[in-house]
Image (cartoon, rainbow, N blue to C red; front, side):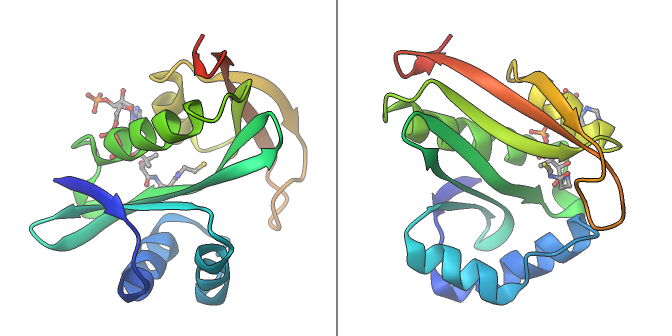
Length: 149
Ligand SMILES: CC(C)(COP(=O)(O)OP(=O)(O)OC[C@H]1O[C@@H](n2cnc3c(N)ncnc32)[C@H](O)[C@@H]1OP(=O)(O)O)[C@@H](O)C(=O)NCCC(=O)NCCS
């Protein structure tokens, strides 16, 4: 498996993975726009087939943000998510930020466990964050002078 930069020809496949992974979708046009904005956008590829993606950016001057991460259902628990998140964290860490934040559905226990393996902590819960009324946990990974604290 390799992790590489997203290319526009990956768009349909990334959208497919997002669709199978979330109830609420950003939509294919949003992925195109995010790419054009120049956000961090990586894919995991196995034998030439895209099996996962991660999108991230600097939200505020001192704060990184994971916008979205997902792995194809048939390829989970094989460390593709880990490889993608390691790369995103290492790129964000070079930018001298204080922490990396993300939002996760409070009922998404699998993803919460996944983030805990990276030492992400729960900052707070925001009730009714998602369209269906579910709350979000705001999680963050503190960094010390750009390095994982
Ligand atoms: C969260 C997600 C990206 C993880 O990707 P993945 O490639 O399956 O994760 P990894 O194989 O790298 O998992 C690493 C570790 O995280 C933990 N973990 C991952 N998924 C887990 C789950 N469903 N339940 C419990 N622990 C889990 C485990 O400790 C795992 O190590 P192990 O398999 O040796 O036990 C993937 O489950 C996914 O796409 N989910 C749907 C989309 C989503 O929820 N994205 C995050 C929204 S904020």
